Length: 334
Image (cartoon, rainbow, N blue to C red; front, side, top):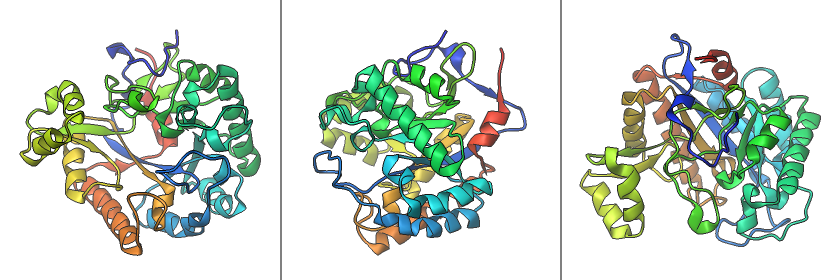
């Protein structure tokens, strides 16, 4: 039996790992085009200038002993500038390449370009399938690498995405952003999904690695029902965080401080989360392309936060991992 990715799994679906795996951290990179985050979705008004900085980012990752997992979309996979950096790193085992689907820039183009259709899971099944398989084939053609992971752009899974992933030979999905609800913008609701890795199917052929987001504070155990109420009252949400009662922390170097990240890491470690999944958007490695990084100073601070996160992980005994290692270490069978 295989379950829909947009539905929370039963507790029995939680994945287990080999005893020597311990707790690990995986760095995922939404490797994508530059576009206006506040503007309308378009087919052609985007850029790829930040790809020139991929060597610098990869060098940084090499220096701190991290194997970044690049989830590439259509414009990136079509760019020689980008792939000439990512592919050699992946072939040498210094990086990995997976799939990320931005439907508004990914052929075939049959749908209207709008906010609702920016979630691939909202498209008609055959169109979602055609786009995802076309991207998989492009990545394989340009890299010679068979991608085994998937992330829906904007975390936009659909009720039947799992069927396409199985057909595409994908072994790991990492689209679920637990503790987030995107229904107000036409997206899925992940507010009841676990943050731990879990199996989508009883055959244990498709593993979910949720992007890590935790609740911190005295009321964190009640976070899943308090935070949605606080979201409707921004002043209340801010007050709860300021007095240490409740704060939602997404583990990313974008938009949070190092102190916030460390608080989130402590929660994830203390709760025994086997795989901490960090994420960032590739355009943030250059200024002016995301709300998080507007200047060269912001770029420097992003690197400092990421370095600080990994330094703290090392001090807490958390090792960096890769998708290849996760696939070797996950235990199949009951």
